[in-house]
Image (cartoon, rainbow, N blue to C red; front, side, top):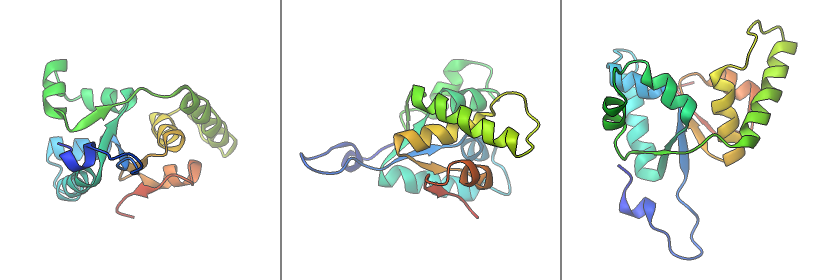
Length: 149
């Protein structure tokens, strides 16, 4: 849950930093992944304590796969994560990243969720918490990626 310190601002203060949390990090904690749960949980708490945790509809959809009911998913997410829409400019940037991916020999025929997530972080100026840093760093080099590597 975001602290009162991170939510309140005095005129002229910078907004608290927002961190877009990739679905793999949330799922590490939810599933108790033996290799990643501790790292992911620590990074989520750190990001929450320093600012705002953000998810978008793509992340929500990826995390929802492990839940039978929307109410259970919403209960798990609680108030810790702000739900932000995917900006239109992020859709455009995701398309451009996908075009580069295809030009570099990528085989997928439609944009991957990571392109929408990375583009959202890029256009909104959010940091990105993920374990899948290489693709984000390749296609969105200006995004501040928080990752184990």
